[in-house]
Length: 195
Image 1 (cartoon, rainbow, N blue to C red):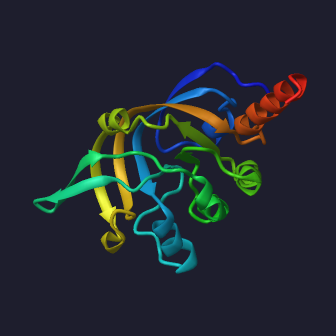
Image 2 (image 1 turned 180 degrees about the horizontal axis):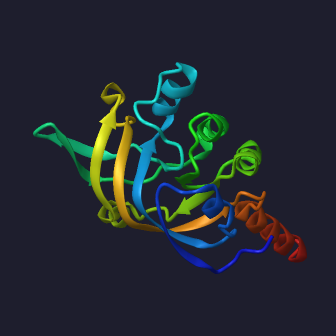
């Protein structure tokens, strides 16, 4: 597959039709509700079998453990960045299959099993710009709910976002993998250069 220079503005929750239409390499801007989670959240959900406090079906999930503070019973954002996704590889399939998430937002991509699960369940991996937490924090309008506070900062977070992005479709719902394409192109150039 070849990356497509397309830009899309989407409101959450995402439908199967919207997700399967996202082209590899396309740019996405998200508005609406998204959920933040990380290693400890995912372990609670899938290793411990804790019931979800609210449904994730149709929503994007951001790999994050925010820097936030509690003021008068509510959390205020300080800095909400994104963490590397690779260590959460084993949770992709249950997150899509059992929780119904439609998109994972993170850094660095995911592995082959995640790519297969995205094809099977109609989901995408949206790559966020690394090192841009200050900008991303401004695009998060509010922290609306926080579950499993004993895991802080790796709680389950519900955010409202306004034009979160740019997010690049790094892995699509049809087996396209921008990371693999870039790696293959780099290997070909290295071989051509005799490296």
